[in-house]
Length: 144
Image 1 (cartoon, rainbow, N blue to C red):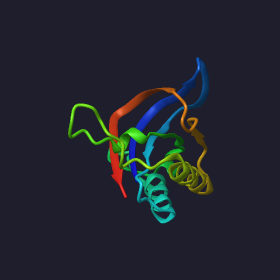
Image 2 (image 1 turned 90 degrees about the vertical axis):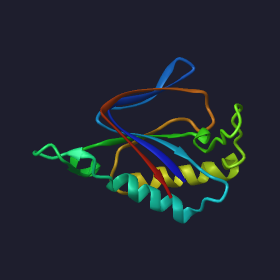
Image 3 (image 1 turned 180 degrees about the horizontal axis):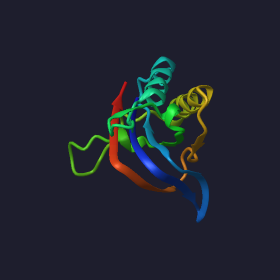
């Protein structure tokens, strides 16, 4: 699994001109699922997302967890994170098909909620417009 995590002041998803999800301070998580990913990896990446200490403490050091910072999560499925760009036209054979990726995406969302986070989501498979105001900017890539 791959997650691109951006610390944001705000983020939202709009589908067909309607804003469907929105958070203020927290993480915008773009989540990609690979063909070989498992439930164990989904749980592990959720744990990493929820424990990533990238909020600043009183000394300006990235030392505060998202939970302690009162962060919210906006998790958006993004199969293009597994694009093969060895040619000019990306291929997506490493990205899991929906019958594999959707349950694993939903498991990550469920795991994060189970850790006490307010979690908003995109709509799996939809054409989404994602907006965010990056904070820092701080962007972390996790590969599990």
